[in-house]
Image 1 (cartoon, helix red, strand yellow):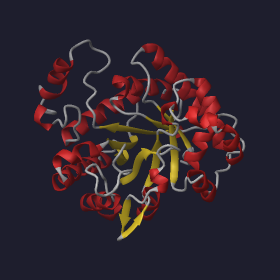
Image 2 (spheres, rainbow, N blue to C red; image 1 turned 90 degrees about the vertical axis):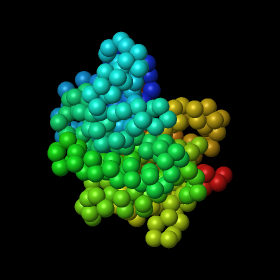
Image 3 (cartoon, one colour; image 1 turned 180 degrees about the vertical axis):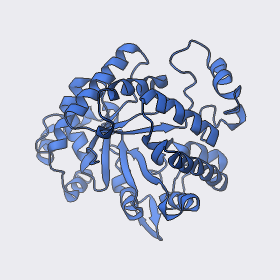
Amino acid sequence: MQLSSLGLGTYLGHPDGDTDARYTEAALAFSVVGGNVFDTAANYRGGHSERALGAAFQAVPRDGFFISTKAGYLPMGDGVTEESQQAWFQRVLAGPGILSAREVMDGCHAITPKYLAHQLELSRGALGVECIDLFHLHNPEHQRPELGPDAFDAVILKAFEACEGFVQQGRIKAFGCATWNGFRVPPEAAEHLSLENLVGLAEKVGGKDHHFRWIQLPLNLAMPEAFAAPTQVIGGQAMTLLQAAQAAGIQVQTSASIMQARILKQMESQRGELEKVFPGCATTPQMALQFTRSCPGVATALCGMSRKAHVLENAVVMNLPKVSESILKGLLHS
């Protein structure tokens, strides 16, 4: 499948039926205009986001969409039953022996094999698919400062072993790490993730044919580190995350392409200059998306789109030629 250069994200919004209906309508509209990449997570909107996409997928052939989801953060509810977070945790996780309180990091995060398997089954059911294209560990760097490098690597190794098992069982096609800070911060930072190290751990589990195939991280005009900062080291050479991913044969999804609309006001104040850089873009969201999707090494730029109108506006950029790397770098240094 040739993946669309834009993907529909489902992070924001109230966990209610009206928002669900808007996401379902937006997902169907995105499919009609040629978009085929959809991103979600088990905890997004308390499980509502996966179910909203699942409703849309009923009308889309299975070979017509690529779905990535994530597990790591505890939803602390299922969006269906009315109960306290403590009661939900005891009934769903602790009671059945899926996850104990001592296995939860910082009160909100877990990537133990049993928990990942549990979340994957919930996601498959909510999305209405037998096999998920891409299953991410959700912000694994959340655990690294508390565990330290060695213990963290041991946790990742077990998680990767579980994910390789999911592949063999036909429940997922590939796995990855969806991050926020991990790949953007320098090597000395406590949350830093080394792509070279992660690939090495994947090879310990699955050999050269491992299924650790993707990563996800923010990339936008206000957070350009993946494109501009040498946060990674491959073979002793410092390079940007996008360069490192290309060297390692890892594909990249980027999140926060318009930074949840927070960068648009500043862009609007520079609209005249940006129009010269991004021909064919009539709105600032289109310009923001055009920057991210044009960065060399980006497979798909994700953008939250819960309304059909936003889909129709943003989809325009999928038909535009990408901006050259030299122009993008000039924009960052202007």
